[in-house]
Each structure stands twice: as structure tokens, then as C-alpha cells.
Image 1 (cartoon, rainbow, N blue to C red):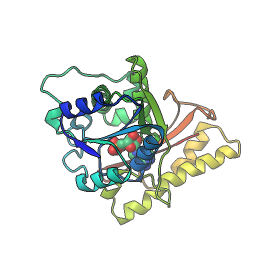
Image 2 (cartoon, rainbow, N blue to C red):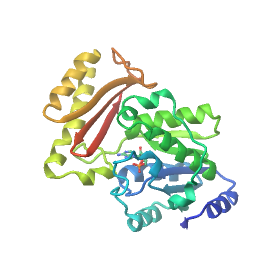
Image 3 (cartoon, helix red, strand yellow):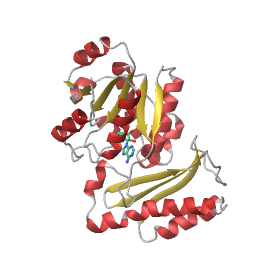
Length: 272
Ligand code: AMP
């Protein structure tokens, strides 16, 4: 595995590749969720590029940019074990100049996550577009865990006619159901226990569906019952274009929720 730090190094590496490239962008502190994306990229491509970059433009003032977990040495080992070909780990000054062309996400970036974090998705798209330009992947891998991000990246690829296939990857969970996230390390013991209610409420919703219950109001109420006592930021039931639904459409519905544990916002969702 080659570790690349500069734009020139990555450009030179990319020029030498004539086969399929699978690309997995991350912010590091790699866990089994990231590893599942990397493994899939490894299976489906001749060359795998992973990036680790804690992207400042997607953090709002006051968010956890400075405290965001960083585990560079452990991450390098994980990438090596997963047989990654190139690991790109740039500095902020390598990726950004003072004056820049900006990417603006579509209006759907201002609901749900984007309402709580206005401008967050502009920063995500900005960095992903830069990374796509550098890595020119055949396939790029993203987790369904960040459902709205996945949708907006797919839309950007379509809108800018980028010749990149976006691969949607399943959510990886702990054995007790908690969706893996680099931010789970912020949880104390009680919060970690309470956090199980997120997946529990989603599984309950899925089980209601198997009993033919499709009314969004009924399902939302059941979810809120399970989450009682927690600081719920939102529960939303949307189609794959993020329009709110009144009735669940199997194959085209996502239930998303965010619960706050102190400063930590935990996201979870289920694709129905
Ligand atoms: P991050 O490092 O948080 O920016 O995440 C990098 C990629 O890993 C994104 O595409 C995430 O959606 C994906 N990811 C994060 N957690 C999980 C998970 N538990 N299961 C599947 N994919 C995940």
C-alpha cells in the first residue's frame, strides 16, 4: 500500500492506472462500517483508493472538528490489512485554498440533517467533488447510514454528468444493533445503553410493516413511544427523493431518526 500526501502524488498514481478504480472516502477513525465499504471496493475493482481527511468545510462553527477522533496509525494498519492500493491522507492546506469555487447542494440539503446543520452538505459535496476529480473512480462507495449524504452525492453525480457509479452500502451494526459510527466513542455508559433504543425503534417499525401497517402517523407514534425520555431531534419517513410520505411505499421508503446525547447527535435509519 502506498500512502500519498500531495495532489501530485495522487495525480501521478492515478495516471499509472488504466483499470477499474474503487474509491472509499472517509474521515478516518475506521471501524467495521468503513471496512465493509473497503472490502466491497476490493472485491469489485482492480485498484482501491481510500482517503482519510477530516474535512473542515462540513463542520459548522462550534461542532466537533477539533475533537473529531483521529487514529492515523491504526487506520493505516486497517487499510493495509484490507489490501488497499493507495491511501490518500492530505493536509487541509493541500485540499483548500483561501478563495475557492463553491459547490451548493440542492434544496433537499436544507431539510432534516441540513436543517440542523445548514451548509454541512455544501462542505461534503465540495470535498467529494475534489476527491472525485483527483481519484476519477469507476465506482465510489458510500454507506446508507448517511442516507441524505448518499442521496445528495448521487444527485451531484447526475447533475454534473460525472462518469462515476455510486455504490450504496448496507449499514453495519454492533451485535446489539447500534449502528457503527466514529462518534460512538463520545457516549458514556448510560448513553451507550439508551442508544440501543434507536435501532430497536426502527426494528419495531419494520415489524409493523410486516403486519401490513403502512400509516406513517401510526408508525411514527410507535417510534416516539420507544424513544420516550430521549432527546429526539427528528423522526422522518421519506421516499428516496426525501419527500415526506403519508403511507410507506415498500422499496421506496426510508425511516430516519436523530437522537441527541448531550453534544453527540446519533443518526440511524432503515431502508424499507
Ligand atoms: P465518515 O468517515 O463518517 O465520513 O464515513 C465514511 C463512509 O463510511 C460514509 O460513506 C459513511 O456512510 C460510511 N459509514 C459510516 N458508518 C457506517 C456504518 N455503520 N455502516 C456502513 N457505512 C458506514
